[in-house]
Image (cartoon, rainbow, N blue to C red):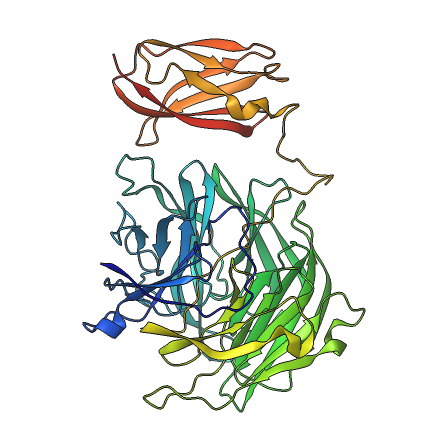
Length: 500
């Protein structure tokens, strides 16, 4: 049951322009208890101000959430780190027991230990790993992901219930920090980079995510060893910065909180120009960057800091923009600052650390310097408890790098390629692939596949032709999907129905 409960308060909130809307639904909640305040909430950014929707479902959340919507902002799927769910809160076929392991049989509580990414027409991947606990060199018990794997799944069935087509495909076997997994779109505008930090090291694994799956592109040793701790990481919206926050130690009073800055090349995946800074205050927290990519925000238990990324000395610009005001939940629990996340409405939202909470904080104007950014503490009250959770999402409105040195998506000579179609539709045993304009400047490849994702027809498309006869006599009646690729790049997709 979906009920609209309230509106997020908003004054002078910027309008959301038409764009990709893969991050327009945030699914949050707490562990699964049979009580109305332990159900689920969706923060729906398809409206301005955003809607808070109470959902009478209880998949259970504890730190981990990642969700995806389609380009129109309609929820497709989400995960709590344990299972993959469709929009109806049903576990998709073979989408169960994602992070479960012998060490932790019910999934994990690792911030940014799982991420969902779109890779093509109704196709997606989930990247995660099995939870592994072990003793480090000092004898302390620490944890990580081992091995790291991916799921590939699709929603090509007519009912959109979802199906895993590749389950737990190993990417590599090395223990990485189960916090701080984050992603940025490749400069080609199509693929994705995902960074993972090897435990207790200065070694980063860089994963390249394409329609064909996920692989280790390379690894890089840079900067200084980062002790295994509670980390949170982000790429700036312009893709030029990779930033990591790490809190490590034994207790709040005997711990360290540090910020690690790197420049990032979206074409090569290279990290460079390492900088680090240890905060005077210590505690769990996280990082976010303003929509204009100028200001870095660091949440640190009782404090929120702002830094100017355009300054020659970034850390010299440290400004306290909020100090915890002492507010407590109705049951007496403190409402401090935990991990932040940039939202489609250009606010930065922050959840609450250490305890389930019905409150979120937000930064109203993150593109503004100093106190003008306006941190609103406990400004949103949810209808349910939220267990230390905000969704792990990349910045989706970053596309191909204009004039970049690496392979980019071919945009065509004219705009006519958006009109490529299979005709007639519905059709029978013979149809025509119609290509208005001047046809393809290079040889193309037509692929048709069934609602289950199986390839049923594949043929070469010559250059400079305007119509291609396609023999579909071998195909049974039903709905099919097609895509046209040129030089390995997808330039057209569509649906075609066969009726004899």
